[in-house]
Image 1 (cartoon, rainbow, N blue to C red):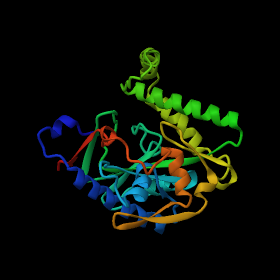
Image 2 (cartoon, one colour):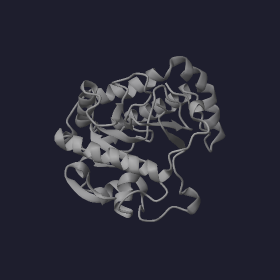
Image 3 (cartoon, rainbow, N blue to C red):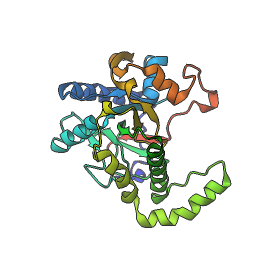
Image 4 (cartoon, one colour):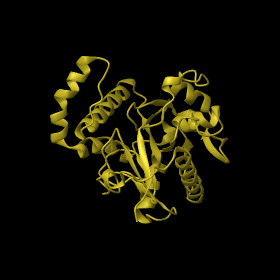
Length: 279
């Protein structure tokens, strides 16, 4: 695994270069998905960018997509069998390499190296697309609450196990994290990633057979399954890409009044740096 110190003093990949690399990754991923009959949608800030800006949010520098559970697992298996199927790219997924410490995947540009300030990585990562699986959630409200509570706990403990301590506004919450940190480090990150991935790998019912789906990420967002039953297409930069047909409901669920621009002080990129990979 390459170290950040090895790149000190070397020129950074600029925000514009990074967006160009990510857009190229997205174009190649879209072609691969079409060729293999895989369903995906623009998601999170990328979906918001498509609707509000017809491309990248001006102050953002990443791309997020989501896939139904079944298609996500097929993607992992296809790229496990043929890791170089997408040119100049590789897939980081816990199911492929247990040194990768997240329960969602990243499609990385193999020519670049990326270092994130807020996370510790146990595998090399490049400039990437984040790929989030959407998992069917129980129609029983109590069961949904239990799953979301468990996943949130797993994400908190995962961060603590890797040395990440994000202080909360409530000092009691921060104190609780400090107490839990030695336990999380002792158990190890694999325990908490595995707990979420075990749910992801267990297909209990089909995507269209339940009312709700949950996104495998830190906030464990919940959506109506019907919002994703049909696709629409929206322009994103020079591409025309798939989005949930009910994208308005998805964005209201995620952001509320999503057409309202955030305050200037909240218009920030993710904290990370990227370089062209050393030969």
